[in-house]
Every structure is written in C-alpha cells, then in structure tokens.
Length: 351
Image 1 (cartoon, rainbow, N blue to C red):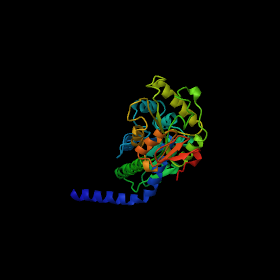
Image 2 (cartoon, helix red, strand yellow; image 1 turned 90 degrees about the vertical axis):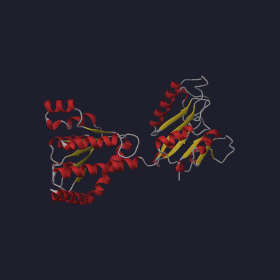
Image 3 (cartoon, rainbow, N blue to C red; image 1 turned 60 degrees about the vertical axis):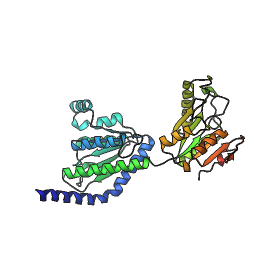
C-alpha cells in the first residue's frame, strides 16, 4: 500500500510539472478577470459535483479573501441556491440550471467560468452558449481531451490528465493561482490625485451646500481625465465646518457630494472616495492630516507618487504632513512653506 501511495504522489507531481505549460493561459485569465473587476463587472462560476464545490470555493476566495485583507471582489457561484436549482431542473430540465441564471444575472463584460472534468457537461455548454449571446467572456477548466467546452471557450485551461480526481486537483490549483494574481495586482499601491472640493472642483461661494450653486471650476474635468488615464485614483478631501457652525447639515453635505459625483461621472470622471470633516476641532480637519491618512490606509495609496491640489495653505500643509511630495497650490493665496503655485491646472506635472 505504501508503494501505491508513493506512486500516486509521483503521478500527481508529474501532472503539476506538466501544468507549467499552462502558465501563460493562467496569467491571461487572471488579467482578464482583473480588467473585468476594474470595469465593475463580476466573475461567475459553475460546475457539477466536485466542480460545483470548486465553483463555490473560488467565488469565496474572491468575495472574502485569498491571502490579503482587501476590498471584496464581485463573484458568484451558480451552484448554491437550492430553490433556484431545483425549480429550474424541474420546470426546464437539468441542462438549463446554469443557462437560465446566466440570462438572469449576467451582463456584458462579465466573465463566466465553466469547470468540468469531462468538458462535455451539457448544462455548462448551454450556459456558455447563452454567455456568447450576452457578450460575456468564457473560461473553461477541463481535462486533457478535446471537448465541447474546449471548442466554445474564449480561454481554455485543459489540464494534462484524463483522470477525474487528478483533473480536479489541478483545477483548484489553477483557480488558486488566478485568485492570487487578481489579489496581488488589484492590491498594489495606487497613485492618487487628492483634491480639495470648494475652490478646486466647484466654485467656492462660501460654505457651499446647495446643488443649485454647483459650478465646476474650468479645467478640472480635463485634469481628472488625464489623471485617470495615468491610473491615479481621484480622492476628495474637504473641510466642511459649516455643519458644526450650523449653516447646513450632514445630509446637505452628502446630497451635494452625491450630486457632484453624478455631474462628474456624466463627463467621464469617477471619484474613488470623498472624505470630509464637519468639525472645527478634529485631527481630521485640515491642516491636520487625518483625512489624508484615512484615505491612504483605505485605498493603499503610494504617497511618494501621489499629488495633492488645494486652493488654501491648509490644504497643502495637510498633504505635506501625510507624506505627499507633490503639492500644488492653485490661485493667489500666499503660503509660508515649500509648494508649487499654479494658475492653471495644465501646469500640474504627472511625470
């Protein structure tokens, strides 16, 4: 019996050595998923039996975590809702249990993984055909043999075995590698363009809170679009002491911020986050660095390669305290410490 176990391990080891041939495929699939997640799309998994377990396992790694504590990624396994599965199997046939869910839940740009040791599972084949109609990309994890899924899939990882248990071992290993690459790449430190709000994004009329008073500063949209092209997150850092002063409410701030985000989105600018301080005495209130530090921690920001932009010296002082090296002061305000003064947003150097 010991010899049988040793032989099994030799076989498993040989399979995984051969799996190196799929390294590029695994990397391509991981980057496919990364781009989908960045667009706001989701990753969908389906499979039968042990492959159903793998579907749930990999979905959990993305929604929860693989190795790093980070934001959840949108993923779902179509194998988990017993009411849906039994209803569809009973009313439409077992071959429709994944296809129907894809039609209901998927949108263009999502990624569908079909995990099948044979590569011929009819319910996954039907799901892939529906995915094609909806302009989803499909990824098949199969065994070595040519199969229906290998013909349909946009991306194929056909592991080097025809034995079910060995195929499953390699499927979960490939899935783990994909999850690890996704997690590492999406959790890399990001550059940020930190913006004050009033006087930088919208005209400062003095304690602005009414949406009717919202008016964009000339040049802010091209600046943000250029920042996005260069992979900067756009984060707003704003003092809003008008709340504690009694001029307006927290709800007014939220309403104005949401309106601002919507107006910028209409022009192709996407705000990653907004931090505001409604208090007069707080470590978050600029010129203190509290809001910057919270943003840096939450979004894993690389401060050395980030930029802050404000129209008051306190904006710049807070950025410097947070460790940001490129700090731009817009307008005519005087400043007693080292800062780059600009009159036009085009003067900002991203290089």
